[in-house]
Amino acid sequence: METRVVSSGQGVDRPVYILQEEAPQSELLLHAHIAAMHQLADRGFMVSDKATLKFAIAFAERDASIAVLSKSGDKVQAIAPAKQKKPLQNCADREMRLTLTLTRIADGAEIYRGSASEYHCKAQAVDVVPQLVKAAIADLAKPKGAYTVTRQGLE
Image (tube, rainbow, N blue to C red; front, top):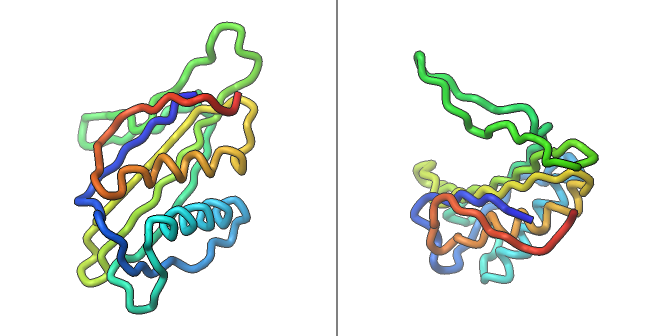
């Protein structure tokens, strides 16, 4: 299983107080939110109304055969390229992507953004979310840019 990770920002190298967003309305996003808050707590982060950073999380899923493009003037760039089925693959892939951000409350500066995505044919999002959270938060202290991690896992 390949997990594509992109992390950016200055990072957070020590635990701080964070202000969490309102509890998500969807069950899946709530599951992701709880997993992320547990991982942050394991690193010493604590939730407080007097926090300096705000935490937010988002999850998206799309048919992997559909490309997501960005257009600026005459230039078109693939944000997420389409993925072709592999030979003998018996179902269509879906891309699952989770993004979390830590933003400085005082001025709105994005201190950390971690995004993790995977292609899945049969796995359910609820089963994939914990791995995506772990990958998205892995570079919290020192963002590394874009890279791929290979692991044994679903499908």
